[in-house]
Length: 262
Image 1 (cartoon, helix red, strand yellow):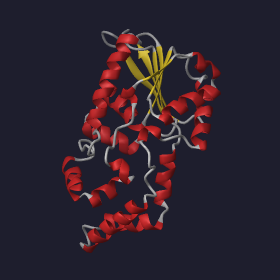
Image 2: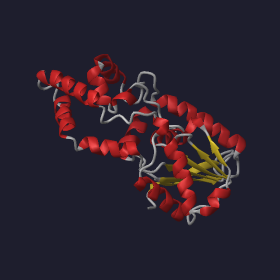
Image 3: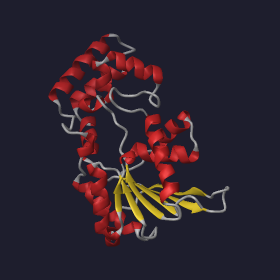
């Protein structure tokens, strides 16, 4: 069989940006902005209200981490999620032959804290692979919210609406097909370097969806439906198991998706 024997994929634990998003939802100023944004087509004056509020929120800078996405750390809760996931994971899979990890801080930390829960993981070679990084949001990173970006850059909102979420590429960033392309390259590496091995991956939300979409050959609409209804959770565990008798070269079959172990 050309594929790994097993492929286990884990999203990083809760990060400081995840907390920031929750804080934003409970901010009265942001709620006022959101109400104007969502009703701007019904009441034209709401466009100007939303734009002014967007500028105020942007100027305050409360919802930008002020650092690169690759530097975003785990929260204390995310650390605990990783440790507990490691503890439970050893009951589900064999000790992997290799660990592949996104080079972002939150994924590396998730892998290292999983070692605390499953100490044998420390003996497994860990390889950082940039193809496992999160989707790059480019200019949107400065705004901390795509709606605020849209209000302050109306041409981007027009383009976003015209192309749709799947195809739209944030300025200086990526779109979903970009992530799927690098994921295709990763799958080629799987068949070339890790055939017959047990592989463990620590990665991100969009990378996990890209993997499923590529493995299952989902089109744009099917991908968006998956993202809408089955988003990967923090430290969610997905397992593919090799079936050598399926197809000419065997195949990886989804055995578990997005399971919470903590």
